[in-house]
Image (cartoon, rainbow, N blue to C red; front, side):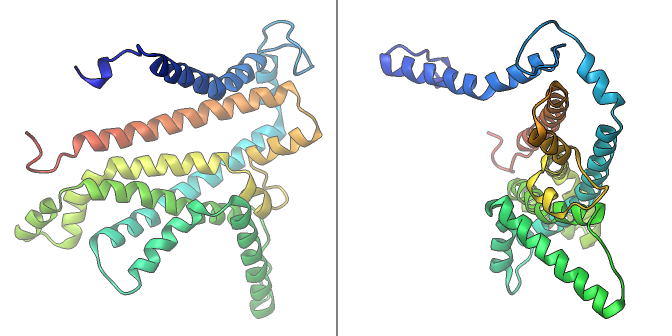
Length: 285
C-alpha cells in the first residue's frame, strides 16, 4: 500500500493530522477574515453590518489608488522584463560555462535572497545617493528618486530569483540534447534558440511571474528609493495603515492578494509543467 493511501490511526498520527489543519487555519483564517470584511458596508473596519461592494467602487474611483496601481504596474513590467533577461543569462553562464571567479559570482547571485530587505534597501539608498552626487559633481546632471530608481532596485533583487528558477530548470535538462545539436553543426546561437530556450521556457516564464509578484508586493525596498509622485500601491497602503485602518484598505489588500495568488499559482504551474515534461534520457522506465 502506498503512503498516499494511509489514514491516521494511532494517536500520534491523528495529532499530526490535526496539527496540519491548525497550521492551515493559522495561515488562511486571517485571509478569510480580510476578504469577508472587504465586503462590509460599515465605516468601522471591525464591525459587520451588511454586505456591499461600496469599498471596491471607492477603490476604482480613487485617483490616488489608481495612480499607485499605474506606478506599480509600470515598475513591475520594467523590472520583470530586465531581470528575466539578466537572470536567465546569469543562470546560463553558471550552468554552461567555467571561468575565473565563477564560484564567487555563484555566491553573490544568492546574496539578495538571503540578506534582509532593510539591509538591501539601505544599500541601494546609499548607492543611489552617492551615484547622484557623482553625476551632479562630474556632469552637472541631477537625477532624482522615482520610477527609475524603484525599477533598478527591483531588478537588483529579482535577478537572483529568476536565476535560481531558471538554473533549476537547466539542471534538469539533458545536456546531450545540446551536444546532439552541436554534432549536427548547429551554432551556439542556433542551439540556444532551437533547443535550449524552448526547453527552459517554462522555467523562464515561472521566474518572470515570480519576479512580477515580488515587484508588485515589495514595500521595504521601494519605500527607501521612491521619490515624490512615484508611490507604488503597497507603499500607498502602508501609508494608509499608519493613519488608521479603514475598510478601503481591506478592499485594496484583497485585490492585491488575489493578484499575487494568481501570479504565484501561474508560476508554480509553469515550474511543475517544466518538471513533468523534462525526463532525462534513460529514465523513462
